[in-house]
Length: 377
Image 1 (tube, helix red, strand yellow):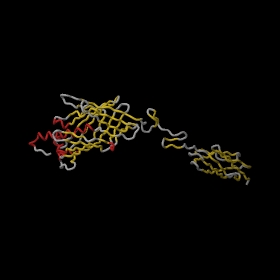
Image 2 (image 1 turned 90 degrees about the horizontal axis):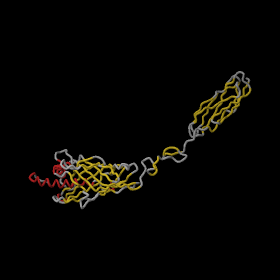
Image 3 (image 1 turned 45 degrees about the vertical axis):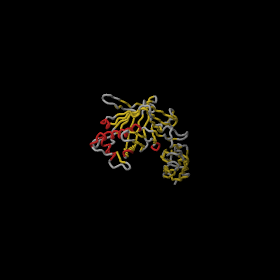
Image 4 (image 1 turned 90 degrees about the vertical axis):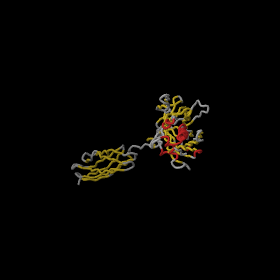
């Protein structure tokens, strides 16, 4: 494959034929891939394509009609993928089916092109506007059997979208093409690849080291240059299947709603639960009998139980039936669900106190009564 400088014409022809074949694979990047199981499937069919490889312009072959709908052997390309409710598009890596392309260069024999995806092809599609974008992560194998050369070019990360404009013509004969959203099922994609240099070219099999990089290097020139280019793909779109609601919603479009918990439960699905009952007094007990001398003090204990599902905060109201036997007007309590709290209350008697008194403690509709007996001495 190595040529001397004395055969520059032969080198140019071989390089041109070889690299035109390499460039042609970019017209097939939107490949056929079966869809994963999803509510909807997006199918893009391309029947027209132009490619421009900047480095090939020096050979007079920088732009070519990769897919010509007027060609008697016209071909089409298909990109199938699963379409989720939020517009996410995925064509699985393992479903990638790209047939081997054989190109008869007429100069250096037949060159076989093989391409596969190094990861899932992902993108987005807007059902309302028809806008589409995707990242095509590819790897290209070139087998020039008659030359004894096998090469791999990777990675080839090619972003495409339904926007932008590129001139695929010349200054004398412009050919401006734009990416266009799929309105009424028709649209086009525009993409480009950059930074594909000698470091991305690898020798495969028995190919002598440096051969593939040498061939590419003859074309792109000085070290650090790139085999940059652009691609335009025109065609149609088709969405099939039943759409999903956007992530976080349920129902069937356009009747999508936020999920709600079943009647009688609270929270946000799937974290639904029965609502907790408010704090509730289950019982109130108090020291039943107290004996105290007049002018002295005594203590009674009041216990309140919370049988509700939440914290119970409130006040125990206290009342004495004898004005000479005094108690606080209330005592504050804070009780955790299912727990009890006991409060100690001081009963005071005056020097004039005599007889008996009833101390009533009440809270939450429950009450308890303590009987106080006042002794003279």
